[in-house]
Figure 1: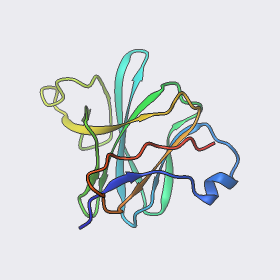
Figure 2: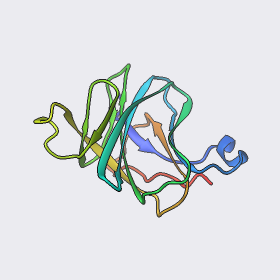
Figure 3: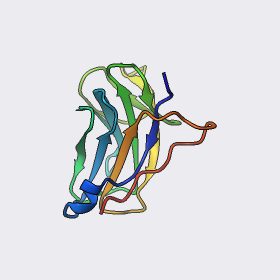
Figure 4: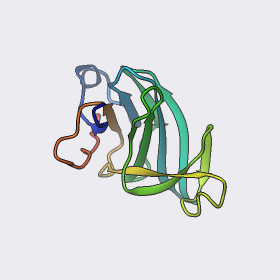
Amino acid sequence: MPLLILAVGLSAMVMASPARADFRVCNATQNLVGVGIGYRAKAGWITEGWWHIEGSSCKTLIEGPLSSRFYYLYAEDAERGGRWDGPINMCVAEKEFKIAGVTDCVARGFQRAGFQEYDTGEQASWMVQLTDEPATGGAPAAPGTNSQ
């Protein structure tokens, strides 16, 4: 099974559509994917999930203009068991969740997962595309894309 990586880009459909202000994740695989997102809110760190994204479709995780510069993403392939992850540890749960704080995950009854950081450059909108292309030479995951 090829390693799962994060890939980014704008499809012709996104480029032809009106400008949107949100954080979207597109699933370019043929499998169902579960996605969690992390971000810094006024009250502190928050992680939320799971969004279930069917193959070859997109979902908006955060609607409206983005309020943070950095967002963190973790995803799992529900059918093949692969994942898109990164080096930033945050909390997740087995069922739908919204968790305040990113420390002591296990002690608080959650699991710890590695999230990939996305620096949106304070753009109002951002899109990440999940693909199952093989990784080349251990290259780091590519950043997301301003989708305006």
